[in-house]
Structures are given as structure tokens and as C-alpha cells.
Length: 450
Image (cartoon, rainbow, N blue to C red; front, side, top):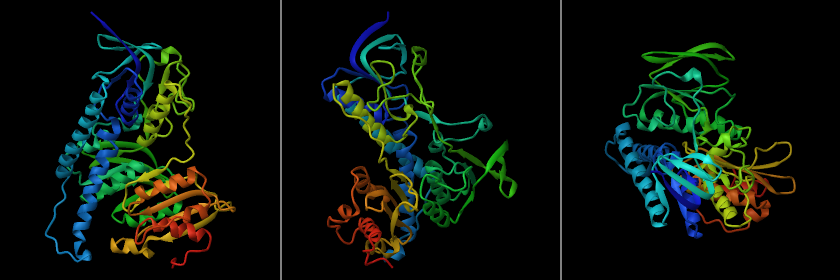
């Protein structure tokens, strides 16, 4: 016999947006339930952010060990293996997923370990249980895009790449966005022969052109093919791609193939027949309070098809729960930072600037005292501001860029003037001075710039 349960808030999905929404709802006194048909933590914890950064941290440590003599240290032989990275990743992911489950249980959230489908606007079916909820938040995330051309056995996406245990001798990576470039960093350092194929004119096209150019020079053991259109592919043992380039047709082969061409929203079963409005991105259309066009139903995170970042999903969760509990907070997407965990790390915030309309200040990593103590010399920071001095964009390519960008994000979001940005005391020697020097250069005041 089917059972019926009633909630003030029911959340579908336990990724960064979903579990945050459930915990916030519980903290505000709502009776909350949550459904998860896969693993706690969603893509970020299990197949995305955390596995990728786990691999990258190990690789970066291995690189330090190899170059220990530069730090005055004589180290013994070290070995980096894919099997070792896999085991470490599994341990970390398992612990984090269990931590999320623990938090939900401690908060009194009812957990359903099954997929939920919509029956009506305020009711869901989870196997033989019928759920009725005043408000429902959809946080079902996204999946990797896989066009028909790539429907061959053995083609990997970010969903599968962290489960392989044997290193391919050569790897073709289709797509030079964030995921593609991070995976190029990982597998080239593991010893695979890596070729990156990108349809656009340059890699990391959402970042400044100087970033793209510098990273190519740093990845000397990775081959890049840009402005490339894959017309056909086949697999006879190895993968073979037929590529149209400005220089003519080219054929490339690789033992493995990783597809990194973006993600698409996963919309729960039964929702579209209720009259749901979709956005041009094919995600769920929402307003600034994360409400869909169906009363009582909200959507957050990747399922909206917009800003597919874990940290954006968490903020959207806060806004949605605030709206559900009578608040007036809204989402503001004007200063969403981008981070790429390559070597050097890359981070930026603000719209790409028109060089004719802005002033630009830069400072190289090689001239920074703290960077030299780290044996780091590649990279830079760039600050763009309006002719009046209002900060418009910041780009960082340097050690710890992904940490430094938070201060820049605050400055862009609050519309700081360059003078406001350089007014605080920046401790010395720190990597944060990279931002101060670049900002001072906007005003022609950097005394340390070579």
C-alpha cells in the first residue's frame, strides 16, 4: 500500500545546491525531505570538482618532489601512478559523501535513496511512497553532452574518467574548456601522450587571450589542435578522429578518448507535462528568486542550464529557501568568478574587457618576492578598470590564483575604485601583492614592475 508524507520543503538532488537547500530549510524550521537516486554530493563531489582537484593536488606535490633540489632538499625517488590517485580519490570522495549524509541526518532531514518523479505541481512519487510538499526545489544537476558522433564504446566523459584504473598510452581530449584543460594537466603529467582538439580558435576561450597563449607555452608536452571540426571517428583498437582544420584535413589517433564539450541539464521525470517553461539553454527557466513558472516549484544549480558552478548552486539554494520562507533576496550574477586548476592556476572575474574602453594594469609573477620563494616564475595578474578608475575585471594566472580571486570578486561586485582596492595593507611577502601591484599599474604607480 502506498504511503503519503507531507513536507514544507522537498528537495530533489543532494549536490551542492540540493543539500545546502535542505540544510538551510531545516535550520529555518521547515519540515524537509530530500531524494537522491545516486550518490550524496552530486557531480561535484563524486565525478567533478573533488576528484579532479584530488588528482591535481597529488600531481602538483609530485612535481614539487621532482624539483626538490631547487628548494635545497635531496629527496628520494617518487612514483606517481593512476592506481594510487584512484585509491586516494575514492577515500576522499567517500568521506565527503558520508559527511553530507551525516549533516542531513543531524538536521532532521528525511532522506529518500531513490529518484523522484513529479505527479502534480506539489506531489512526487518515490517508488511506492507519495510525497506532498508545499514547496519543491529541483537540484538534479547536469550530465556530460555526448553527440551521436561520439556514441562509440569506450568514449569517456567526466562521469567515467575518474574510474579508470589503467593509464592509456595516448589520450585524445575533445574540448579545451575548463574540464579539458584540467584533464590535459592530469594525464600529461601521468605520462600519457595528450592531444587536445578544440573547435574554437583558442583554448580556454572564456579567459583572456593572454591566458590561453601562456598556458599553451607551459604545456609543452601537450599537442593542441584549434579551429578544428571533427567530421568522423572510428575505433579499431585505438580511436581515430578525422579533423578539418584551417590547414586541411588531419587524422589523429589515441588509445583513449575523453569528451569534454559541455554539460546539459537533467530535468526530473513528469515535470515538463505540467507546463514547465524551459530557458534557451534547455534548462529550467527561473526568475531572480529561483522560482519556475509553476507556483511552489523552484530550480537551482546546473538544471537551470545557466551558471554551472557548485558555488553558484549553493548561493541559489540560499536565495530559494529565503524566498520560500518569506524573504526578498535575489540572485546577482554580475560577478561570478571562474577558476581553472591548471599549473599555473587560472582565475578571473568580471566581463571580458574591450581594450579600447578600459585601462589595464599588469604585474608578472616573476617579479614577486613570495613567488620566488616558491620557485614560481610563470604567470601574471591583470586588472582592468574604466577610465574613471572603477574596477571592471581581474585575471590571475599564478600559484593560488583560485584563492586570490575571492578578494577580487568582492571588489568587482561592490564596484570598487582602484584606489579603494589598493588602500588596505597587503602583507609582504604574499601572493596577494600580485593584485596590489597590478592595480597600482593601472594608475601608473607600480614601483616594482620590471
